[in-house]
Length: 380
Image (tube, rainbow, N blue to C red; front, side, top):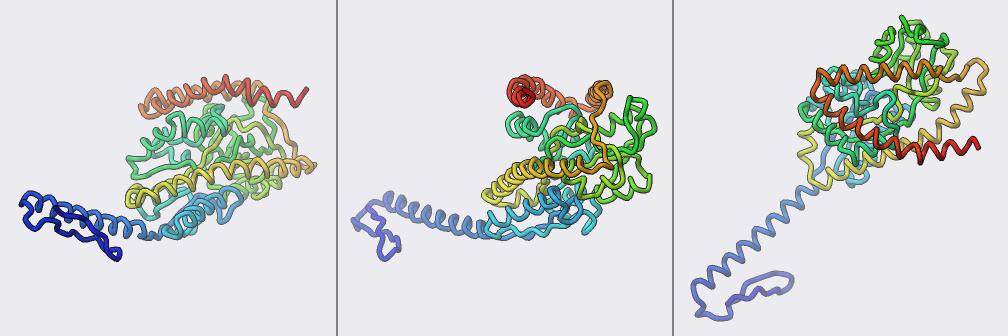
């Protein structure tokens, strides 16, 4: 027989019976070969685990823009920290390496390994992509996270992005947004006719259905466009970010609620080839870093919007007003018309919308007797 003996930390085989049979020798030789193979595999795995990566992230946001830009920075920071520096990421704000609205193509092609933005910017690639940011009169922030993580939404998002060589992750949410800045009052639906408003995604389609003109602009161009009359109105995010852009200086009326973006999810997209080149632990680190930013951004916006809103209310040159109920009712009707039209001619939109709508209907019953019912107690 053969014994495996450890001496001074070195494993060796020793013969117990010099007259052992040939079959026993073959078994012993196989054991030696198996041990050597395992040791080689462990060495290779160790080598892979220590491999380092230098990546680029491109974003749609202005440099270090509060909440959105800093959220992208945090994704990079968390990935680098959690990986022990095995993934180092250089972040490029919108316009520094590529134009803000070319992020999708840059990451898809491998010009950059990571991108941060909003999926509704890429509707020209597939109409279905808009649903992973927000749907007018749709899921709020808590519901959106529930659908993505536990309702099949993320799997549908992956299905939509895979043909473009991308792996998407939720990576931020601002919470329900404001309805927008206007220089004329919206008293009825007729006031939307001819109105030039910066509003992306499905909300922009609803405005067009109402007779308005939806204009696509990156955030960095909004102030000048509104100031010079290129647009008549704009939505951006909410009080925290809107003050950062100085929108209160170029518009008089601040409308709520943000019917067009009730729970807008931001994304971190990863080039699929680059992602698949990573060992499993680094793939998990990217996922966890994005989840951390997703939670952190929501908390930040809830905290800072309340402070910024008070500042806006105290400014006597700005009037904070709700949309008329009849206007909201008509906008909601138009929203469903826009979505159903898209679903009727696009199978992927239909598939995503079925999942989204079913989740919305089921979730809304719970929200009404939990979150909404509790909020209503504040008026007692």
